[in-house]
Image (cartoon, rainbow, N blue to C red):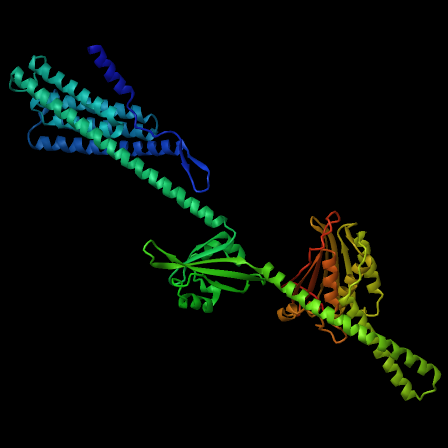
Length: 607
């Protein structure tokens, strides 16, 4: 029986350790992934909590011991001397030394369990000594056993409470028994065996009751702490997930309070608006959407209207670019349906807007093309007859000089009208050219050589060709591409009436080939850029307004794209993008024009 009891006490000693939850806890999240909570942070938190409790215990026990000793001395409950030493001074110094030793071990931050066991043993020994030297069974320091049992339960859990109660009972019972048997002379008066037995039993009952209560409180405290930590972890994980969702969606998302101050501004919103995400928090949303749109948000009844409030318009982005953004506004409500603020989600509709403009342009071009075919047919035949008649009349008649001049004007204007009709026919019924692999560098060099020797070039004009690659292969028609290059170059030269430099660059790209015409001419305003591809829209007095429209058709036929960047007074840049040679022909693929107002140099281009 005694052997089993000793084994149980030993097992209680070796098992003294705070409870640790399962090493890995799996939680099913909204993303469908299993997120594992690492065990290391939990153990670290436990060690920090145990370290904090141990420090508090060291400080509290020192204060409680010193105050109790000095109070007992005031009440004349302590002997004056312990042998040749002053009793109070000895225990005060001993208490201070133990406190310093405990703090030294605590600062080492190692072997917390061993330190707690060492401190428990020291306090049990010190308490037993105090009881022994302060009248034994009548000593007021028996209550220290209860304090030791309590902090055993709080620091070491159930097993700690059991060990503390068992050792306190054994030490107290052994001390009283030794006093009763006369081994030590502790109390001034002798007590009966039954009274000593009752005292021991009563104190033992108190010790075990305190151990039970301390263990119960420890369990409840630990359960509450772990429940709180689990809820904090769950809330933190949910908050992280919410942040990841908000930052990962590709639509811009802004939430505001009722006054319009921005509370959430995700990464996509920063990319679409060209603003810093963190810098926008707390700023008024009016700086983005404008006072008029914010007024519409405040005036609109978002509760009764099942459809969200929408706004689509061009926005100026820092840096000079323009983006067409589509906003959708919804109310931000709490669980009681009370309005807390507003949610603004938006997307970049720039490409969609430009594709719509392209479709509208193509519809207009189709209508004009049908009309052009009929007009050209009706004009060309009588025009040819008129030109022939004039030539015959001039060759057979001796006319005065004045009449000769009139005939020259008639011939010249007939040629001009004939050129107009030919452009009209080219626009209305473009010829079909066979496309073959060709080198864009060679075609461009030929066009540049022709431009340098053309009558439109003056001494004040210069052309610089920069070919980054020796060869850029694409599939196309050399004749059509030469027409594209010639028209763009001619327009660039016209846009520099006082002279200037035309830079032409060509290089190979992963998407195919890229040709850039950039001048430092008169440039274009945003309004002029909007009309740049419209038929019969020319910024030059000698132009018909069909050149760029024909270029647009040729680029569409080559599955390429043309874009313009321009600023008034700073020039124009025209960018031609060609698909790679190995791309399969796709008749349904259309080129589209990109027009944006930027602070780069660009050419006024119009036919």
